[in-house]
Amino acid sequence: MYTEIAAIFDEAESRYLKADELSVLGQYVGSLPQRLETYQRLRDQELSIMQQVADQLQAEMPQEPTANLERSIKNGLLVLRYCAMSTLLNDDSFVKDRLLNWLSQSTQTYNIQKVDTVLYKLLDQRLNQVFNPQQFSLLAPSLQLAKDALINH
Amino acid sequence: MISVADLLIDNRIPGNYFASDVYVRGDLELGVLENRRGDRLLALPETLIQGIYAGLNKETGQATRLVLFNCGRWWGKNFYDRFAEELNSYYHKAVVDMDMAEFLQSLQQCWITHGWGKIELDQTHQHRGFLVIKLWNSPFASQAPKSNLPVCFLEAGILSSFFSRLADKDLHCIQTTCESLGADCNYFILGLAKRLESAEALVEAHESHEAIMQKLCA
Image 1: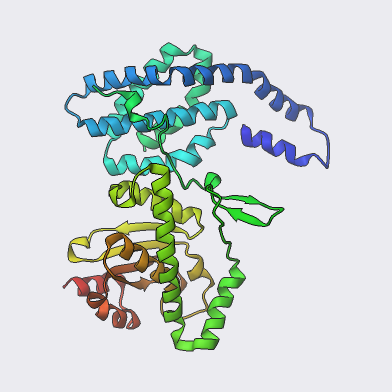
Image 2: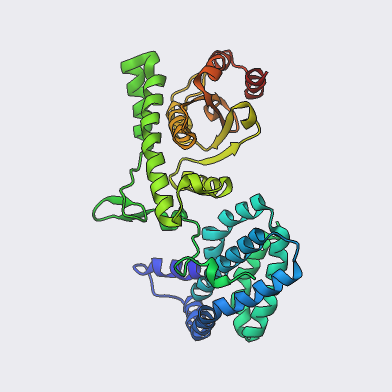
């Protein structure tokens, strides 16, 4: 959506915006209060959300070396921060281009897909408790991209 | 118990430092291209790369490969210093203390972002003292004049001094396949100069990369 909106502004000298283009812009502006609120909530609750996920992760995978759990949690924090920004921008490619290609390599190298699978299951559950369905739906697309890149590849 | 707060350093989690859209910046009015720290970047137009090959061929003939290799060595030395310094200031960790995967991830992204194509390391022969490097989409291979031998002398020089600095050993580098000769990627072999002595003649005899590797490891 962000790139779609950015492209709209390239035509300033040739014409005024058409109704459907203005409607795209209007939809984005209309969704901003909800996006800001989601962003702020995630920002403020980042540590408590992730701490709970980390505790459950450790409980579910007691045999897993702590280094692998910590790596997966750290990557999860990074993904969450990028998802938060993607939500603000309404641009899923932000998380994909800037983070996931890079991150997926290390996930494979360290062989932590199994830990990531459990982590994202727990994270999904936790986010569903913290956010209302509308807010969760704003985070979900970029989070899904992360899961596809890190677990389901 | 894992404390999530303790996993953050100064409330941050270092990510993809060399991400292209964050790393490369510019000011068109000043005509300046910079990296995210404000260090100057240099853009090489294709014409210049073609001109370097053509000029060197005319002025130095056979010595072109040596001149380019030595320029690459100089470039690689400075590139390593900058790479190490940038990673150190971003990750708060010396390059030698990074584990191999972290280091590789950074190098690969750095290579892409600088427009040098894609780089991959093959450590299969490391126990025999050789490191194989694969490069794709080399701007030098694509702009060099036609030859019947590999032409990425500059990159060979860069790789040789970059990895010499990293390994703290003087390593030589030989290119065995080249995109300019229709190969799908550029293969380079890194190792001690003495152990690579025979490889040069094998490349000139148009032996395949696999055959050269086999003879080196025999």
